[in-house]
Length: 131
Image (tube, rainbow, N blue to C red; front, side, top):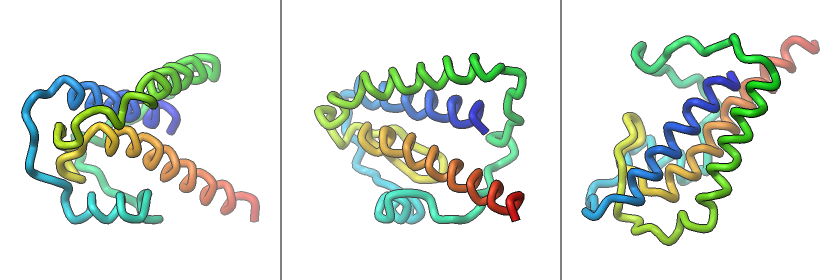
């Protein structure tokens, strides 16, 4: 799970960087589901089925130290963007396969929404084993 979270966070951060260097506004917006998750501030408590090509198995070979180091890199990248994200034209957007056209702020927020979604799932699984 942590490998998946780290890889996806970097993908979202890369898309933020793409938004930041654009010089053409995108008039299109989010999909209906994209609008919904941003309105509620996160993913609904459902299992989301990804297409097979996006459902690659995680790398489970990293040690705990490796994962912590990789997570620290995500945190560093997020902190470097924190003060800049709202200064980028909100009409500079990059397309997300399921949520539509997202701007820098939306990509930034998606990192946290994605983390919370999986950590909630992890908590639900752990509760099943405690009983």
